[in-house]
Amino acid sequence: MNWWLNPLVVVTFLPLIGVLLIALLEKQQVQLIRWMGLGTAVVTFGASLWLLAQFEAGRGDMQLLVDQPWFQLGRLAVHFQLGVDGISLMMVLLTTLLTPIAILSTWKAVEERVKLFMVFFLLLETGMLGVFLALDLVLFFLFWEFTLIPMYFLIGVWGGARRIYAAVKFFLFTMAGSIFMMAGILYLANAAGSFSLLELAANRAAFAGAGLWLFLAFGLAFAIKVPMFPLHTWLPDAHVEAPTAGSVILAAVLLKMGAYGFIRFNLSLFPEAAVQLAPYMAALAVAGIIYGAAVAYAQKDLKKLVAYSSVSHMGFVILGIFALNAQGVSGAVLQMVNHGISTGALFLFVGMLYERRHTRDLAAFGGLWKVMPVLAALTLIITLSSAGLPGLNGFVGEFTILLGAFGSEVLGTFWFAGLAAVGVVLAAAYLLKMFEKVFLGPVTLEENKGLLDLNAREIITLLPLLVLMFVIGIFPNLLLNIINPTVEHILAPLASLVR
Amino acid sequence: MLHGLEPGEFILWVALGSLTIALLGILVAWLVYGRKPLASPKTADPLAKPLGSVYRGMERKWWVDEFYRAVLLRPADWLAEKLAGPVDQGGIDSLVNGFGSLTRSLAGLLRQLQNGFVRFYALAIVFGVVAIVLALILQMP
Image (cartoon, rainbow over all chains, first blue to last red; front, top):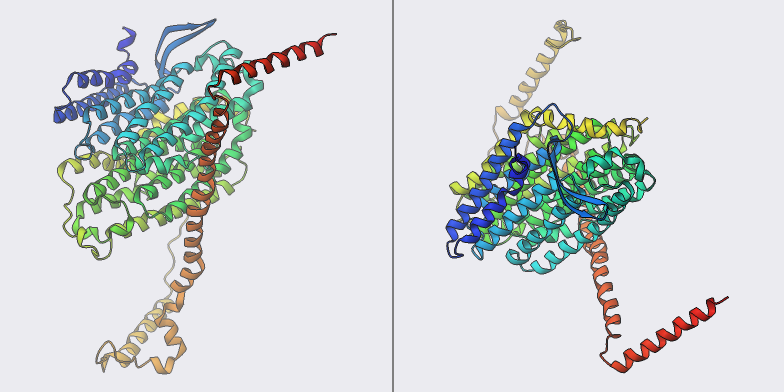
């Protein structure tokens, strides 16, 4: 089989074919461009299902490897090396599912420069997929940085009033972290003579002495992306200014790149440092959970509320990762998928309100259940999924994470899990407050009386996410059977370090 | 059937006792309200006087909601506002923006060196050469 027919290569670069086709269209053919963008994203999703079919679920190591020599840097060879395991597979499926949904949400929301918008959006998809599949550190870094460019333009061109400030802040924040990661990659390659994650992981002795510093260098880049408290202030600005589709992808996929990086690189390459720093990481995670929830509670802007809720929810993911046991890390990966689904859906809901009222001020709503019963019912499910109601997806992830954190030998105390559990209650508080202010009570404002309920396109946009909330909530093993072997594989080097 | 749970035995006096209490309650309710219904919702309750403060307490559900509002909700609201305003925007985010301003002002200082006067650059080169020569002389054994 030709290497470029490998499903990983096909999935990663299919969006680029869509970019080429769209580039051939006249920019006035707006509707055709939209359909072309959506079609490309749907075909890419189909290809990721083909990848899923090729994937052997019982295995924890890298599969379907692609390894082509690319270019030479002195004695060091950079390879075009891709591979997939249970964790990256989850992230790939999340990306290919959310991209067509996000594109569908732009149908009426993006009217200007549609061609450019679709091109950036599909470029962003290739960048994100590359991040989750690259095994060569140079290739990973290229994809990682590449995602910045389309996102920068999506915020900066199609964003709100302070879009330039938000776009620059997003860019500079991420770049500041990436610089340290790049230095770390160069150090690793010099010490161990390879850019390949697999070879580096097998040759950890070569750089074990600098493990702590390398952990911090990679960790800073990932912590900004997640974002972990107190590096989170770019997120509310980026979310508030970004167009709906940008917010959806930012929350659902781009944040996961940070958590994914922690698992893929920090745990695999620097396990000693991970064990040593785990309590500090867990402390920051718990601080983020409580702090994010409290700040979300005080927000008057719907998008800011959801943005800060992400700080809180992603804190759970980090807590799970640094419990450094099977439950914690599996729960974290599951919660990464869950957060993508429920927060993606929350931003879609905010976007649907915004398209009708052109405001996101909580005070501008109230009583909408009577005017838009369909949106209200669907949003109630989304809200409860995000709040972790048993039976829906969010519960399984948070519960598994808390279970892992309670039993974590590395963390050594139940206090992290105990305080994090408070965050579950706070999540219910700010989410139900949001729901109450928007949907319950009488319709107080004249402007809200004539609002139209969801149309078919909008329902179709939300439906796949709502179905998944139930499916994952009731049958979490569908995902855990794929995630667990990989988690065990990644935690194997840590076993000897943990008492 | 759950493991380890024995079915409980039937105790007659417990069953009869609770039934009697319930029936007595119904009887009292009928005596007080049933025989002569209140004329309107605004009519004073016949029990308000004899029960006094107990009645007022029950009417206000013992101020549990008010208690929660004062002890939990108000402080939580206050804390959330402070975290979102002064701490997050005023503290953490100001620090981030402060880095930006610092870079800008440092760049502003450095910019003044690039003043476009060739004589100034020549003078800087002379100073540089002198410094290098001095350093070489001082390092000679």
